[in-house]
Each structure stands twice: as structure tokens, then as C-alpha cells.
Image (cartoon, rainbow, N blue to C red):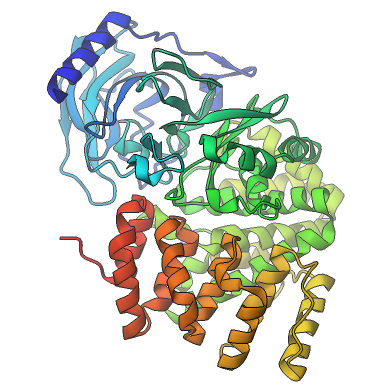
Length: 634
């Protein structure tokens, strides 16, 4: 039956044809202009862009939940050197049925080879190019080894009636569901036609439908050039709810009301962001709330942010994550790190932008609490890395040679990057710094950026132009040196000062603080500040008073369970097990499993929970936690 389905689908592809016209102009920028003239060689991609580079993708696919496979045809328009004889694409665990090449709609079979697979990078798909060819067409299907894809059965969804599929392409997992040039420095436009079961809705990082149709066939177009890691697909029983003239949210029916309430401020956030750093360039900003196995808080897929349900706190207290993903529409999606060694250029800028949005939305007191929590996490991670001889991983500019780019997804890129930009703001003055950022996003829109290119841009367009006293050795200390500079800015929060006073008073007089007006962030500061040797009777008293073990706020749960492990507070362990089994977000999972693994009893508990939870986790989380626990599935 599966073979027949495959044949039927490719007959459908041939019958319907493939609109290969692409788009030559994107918001006034031609495709050629949107790509770097000479993209840097990316150590995590087999592509040789100086020889042949992809410009446009036409993707036609059928999603088959019965076999957990995608059957597809990827047609790629290329630009190449006249003497180029081959096109190199990235692929991982794909089954390639055939490859054709030609001009326009003409397709002729051509030779192709797959290199031996590398554990991290997968295989190079080498396609022989006829001299005049400007299109290649790959007929293929995904396999069980498609690390980007998570196929969920109905029991793993909120509605319990329909299956669900979502992708996670960052950093280099797009190649496991589409053969392409999987480098953040290579941008392309795309269009797609996707066939799914008629009772499900398909969505992509593109122009999206807002309701399902009877045929289950959906057409998509992304007019702005994007890198491969921003390719995204979600298929499930979801509904759409408008949040404003250019924003909305998709979620399963059971979560749509809750989601619409939680994200009601998104139009205001977009307006704030535009006032700060220039126009939003992607037409719409929609979100989809995914099932809990999604491994991240959010993923900034253009026009369709993927979001974890763990931010549905019921009081909009965790929506700084939405501000973060929205900010990526400028820092990351518009101006992109050229390689994963330059990851801080995406995340450091985005954390800075996020904090500025939250400051404008909720005031300086609020944003300073966010900054102080970030500083606490940053100092803890730097201390751990320096103690484990990972000093070079505390650099902003990373060396990821022969390493998985996920190794660079640490607090360093996010928060050391943020504090570097905050330091620059302090050195230059906010007004001057804001104008520099407006120009930076405008001048480099739809392009990629290396750390070295950024430093040259900074020198020319800020330091020299404004005669700012910033010296080369200061910049190098932030970018290329280990640890944290002495010039690290320290946020100030009177609200956290009050929490510290309450904690000190409680420990001295054992009179519990009055917390009725505390925000999530004040609670997090309080929990993280609890001494590790807190008396067990006080731990019990605290939990009995505020029921932290059974909090409905995922951030508070994660922080409290981490302390519960330190306190060996067994009353929290059953709820902690439920949390670990019900949440797939790596930010929460990794620290808890790591803390549990430090004792024999804790590790035994962790392995017991992980055996049950692992089938519900995405590959991104599994690959981290397997290593933490020394878990072997074979």
C-alpha cells in the first residue's frame, strides 16, 4: 500500500506540474542582491556556493501519517559558475529515488551520488549539471531517521483525536526533510504545494491558509529570501484566531481560547518593535502553539513562530518569549549569522531587542528583572564552563570545527551577547545606539553577517562616525576572550531588592513573605536565591504555604524542582516526574536531568522517568539527554 501511495503521489506531481517561475523581486530587492556576493564557506554544509548556489525552491509533497513519511519533489533553481559541473546539496537520511536537471520545465535524468554519511552533517548529494541547466529536481522520501520531523500520535496531542507533525530545522536539520544547501549564509525564496489528510490543516513558514479545505491540498509562498534553518512545516487539527490586522494564532481547538488571550498584546509588540528599529518586512506575524514535545520555547520561523504551550501561564507573564521571537524578524531572519560560529549575532541582538520591547510594554522595572535573571543564568553557565575546561565556549565567536552546531546553543550566545550590546549602548548613548541599529538592519536586510564583518561595520558606522572612545582590545575582550569582562553591565532592580529583603527576613525571623503582588520573575529570583542548605522544615513550610510543587507556571515549576533536587525534597518528586513526562522543552529538561544524574538515587529516578518520557521528546531534546544520562537505546 505504501509503495502504491508513493507511485500515485509522483504521478500527481507529474500531472500537476511545477510552477518554476519563482520570484525575481522581493520588496524591491532582487534575489541576486539579497544573497551575499560571496557567501562564506560554512564548515557545517557540503555546499560550494561559489560554484553553484540555490536561489529558489519549489517543494511539492504529500504527508503520509500511516508510514510517518513525506513523499516529495524538491525543484531547485540555481545560479552557477559557467564552468561548474556539479551541484552540492546537504542531505541526511533521505531516500533519493531519482534526480533530473534541465532548463525551465524541461527535465532530463542526470547522475547523482550520495557520500558516506557523517554523523553530524549527513551526506553530500552531488548532482551532475548539464551545461545549460538552471534547475534540478529531486524525487525523494523521508525516512525514520529524519531528525527534524516529529510525528505525534493522537494521544500526544491536546485533542487526543488526530495525529500531528511538526518540524524543527535549526540548526542543520532541514537537510533531513529537504535536500538543499543547509547553511544560514545561503538564502532562497520558496513556494510549496502540500497534500495532507483532509481533516488536518497544513502550515509553513510562508503565506498561510486560515482555514482547512476539503481537498487537504495547500499552497504556500515565501517571497522574501530565507536560509534553510527557517524552513518549517506543521500539520494538525488546529484553528486560527485573529489577534489584529496582521497577526493571529493557530492552536488545537482545546487551546485556542487560552492562546488568543495569552498573546493578545502581539499587535502592540509589533508596533513597539517598528518604532524602535524600523518596519516589519514579513507582512504578517502569526504564531502556532505546538504540542508540548516541541523542544524549544519558540522558533522564529518567518510569518509563523512556533511556540511551546509552556508559556500559556494564564496571566501573560511569560510573553517575553513572544517578544523574543518577534525580535528575530529583524535580528536573525532579516540579518542572519553567516555560520553557526557567529550564532551570537542572532541571539545576542534578539535578547537585547526583546528587552527593549518589554521595557516599552511594561516599564524599565520589568525589563531590568528580565536582565538580572539573565545575568544570574549567564554567570552560572560561565562558572560551569570554566570549571569544565570549556573556556573557549564562553567566547562569543565560537570554534565549532568537527562539532555539532547545537554545542553553541548556550547562554553565552544569548546573554553574553546581550550584555555586550548593552555595554555598547552605555558607551555610545541610547539615541546614537538606536540609530545605529536602525541603519544596521536596513543596510544589511536579507543578508548574512559574520562576526568580523559586524566589527568592521561597527567601526565604520558607529565608532569612527560618532567619534566614540571604544578601543580594539575592549571589543576583542568581549568577542574572543573567555569568561566575562570586568566592564560587564549590572542591571538594577528595586523589585528584586525587595525580594532579597523578604528572603533575608524570612530566614531570620521565619516569617513568610507576602507574595500576593509578586510577578513570575520575582518568584524566580526568590527561588533561585534560596540557600542550598535550607533547613528541610523551612522547605516544607514554603511549599505548604505557596504550593510551588503544583504550580501551573512552567518556569516556576522548573526552578522549584531544580531546588527540590538540591534539597532532596522527596515530596516534589512525583510532580517533577509528571513535569518531565509532559514537557519536551530542552531548557527545562536538561538542567533537571543533569542535577538528578549527580547522585546514584537521582540518576536511578531520572532513568526510570526518561524511559517513559523519551518517546514523547523531539530528537533535539533526546540527543542532549541521552548524553547526560549515558542512555543507550539499543
